[in-house]
Image 1: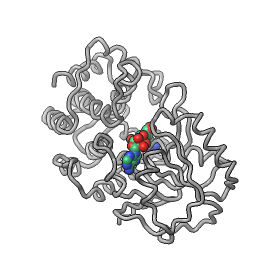
Image 2: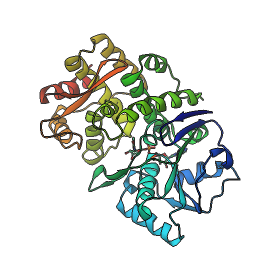
Image 3: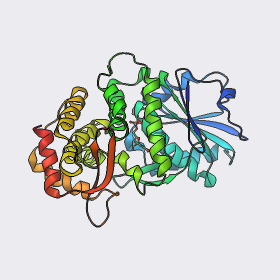
Image 4: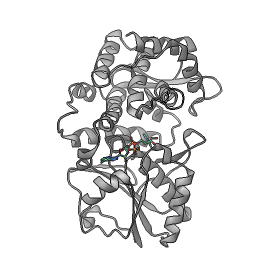
Length: 351
Ligand SMILES: NC(=O)c1ccc[n+]([C@@H]2O[C@H](COP(=O)([O-])OP(=O)(O)OC[C@H]3O[C@@H](n4cnc5c(N)ncnc54)[C@H](O)[C@@H]3O)[C@@H](O)[C@H]2O)c1
């Protein structure tokens, strides 16, 4: 078991779920409510130790398409129906969708009740559950409504990963690779030969990634500066994710889109942030080893560029990128021209 401490809570990374008494929750708790989706209800809920005092379970449909106001309305109503008061604790047992939405519902119900994050996907264990960002999608835009609020505790148990479909595991691994690239060259080197198909000791990887995210969010909790390095690969990746979902009708998982974005933004890193060509070749080969290539017709480059311009992280001056000075060292707020963005997409097609 590893415990990573943040100022107001700790992340417990463990191979076995702890007994309730070992969680160290000292607050008065009137009711314990667990939020799951259909998949985590089947695979994760049965793993909770028998001494956990669960009073109620709320189950929702799985998937990003349910991360919206309609589902929140149902959740607030359920909490009211079960007479949850301000001392109730909501345990979000699921991937990033459950964590983001359950946290948002908890942070707004009766002006805020306590919640605990129990991330069950690799992506949510290394990324979504840490950092206090909560929210839902609205009008086709991702995470546009939300709050910043810390959980009382995070429990990331590697046993949950045993039932996770391979593509979901690999999607989370894209964020792990990103952590190495933006902050720790040695970590990046150590990740190059990870065998995702075999059982793996995930505890060390999750702990290292959580530490990297902690360092970044502690320095800049509200994304005014340094936190932007976490967006490496995401400016182009998000545009591709949205385009594939809304225009191509061939949705990619988040990490699959970010893997493409990281290759493109590594090319921009050579052009605009001084990274070496050798590092670009290395990054491209490693990411391609895990994520097979997709081809994008050049006729969609304009549409992708327009999607990037709509990203809520931009300001009136143009599109800003987080780029690598070298593997393990990332800067932010690089202004990049439209021509270079298209050059990066072209590089992805023909490295
Ligand atoms: N708050 C943040 O800082 C932050 C950061 C990154 C991503 N996110 C958000 O996270 C979400 C994506 O998270 P995700 O990739 O975890 O997706 P997800 O929550 O949709 O989970 C993926 C799928 O795996 C299933 N699943 C979860 N755990 C399982 C398990 N142990 N065994 C079997 N199946 C399981 C889920 O039911 C779902 O079908 C997005 O909404 C994204 O916006 C938030």
